[in-house]
Length: 338
Image (tube, rainbow, N blue to C red):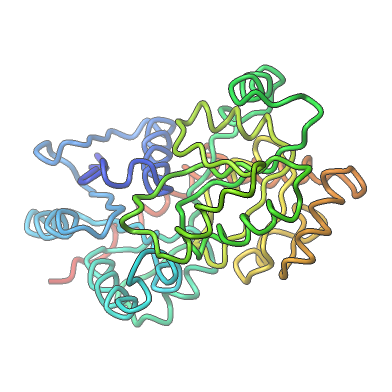
């Protein structure tokens, strides 16, 4: 068996969670010693698609013509497309039709969680849908004093200062507006939001919120590489994940792997596999977020990081790769539809 890990338009999604997922898939294939390539001109038995761009659709047509099997990874839903970029709510229904059309080109569909599977199951897809985590490289995102020191030194943060971080695009869905409000209300803590989005795509409401000049403890350093992000997890005191909708959230897994305390918005996806007050802390409204943040940062509540780390270990790439191999075998047994 040889897998084509298709990387068409990787430059467009390389800095996103999908780009990270593709890197995890490559590492899984290496761990399994499965022959793989990124060159579609080579021979292959299965093509693994991750994007919904036209070139991926063309690749699915080409694979069908050659009698190859197609594994389509469904990273997106209409629900997590809403409240993202300018005009996203208007075109969301059309986005749903488009992704359904793309996903149906697969012999099987994989999506990161049972929650996202439950959403896709309402789309009337004609292919079987399986859930499989994007996984996490726990060895890479291990916590270390050296990483903490590098982060603090780079951003000139005193050791006694408490730091709150989040990671993601500049989207309302990601909760960046609440992140800004909390930074304003909690001036004793430093707030860092890592990630980048072209301002041409960012709605006016979010632009205005980000451009406030009276929040000296709020920082937007932009996109940072994988090594720098690991250092940020290790050098911070709280990972604040305010997202309103996700299919999984790779950055959340990274924070858990780095043994960073985590506070998430209490939304359905995290009701299924993140136990409140066991793996993470949860909140719904701004006052509750503020209260719990203070309690976590001032060590007034139990440390849950060891439990969170154990959960991350369950989703380590080594474990995920075994299930991926099973799904490849299932796709090989499926019957191609014309």
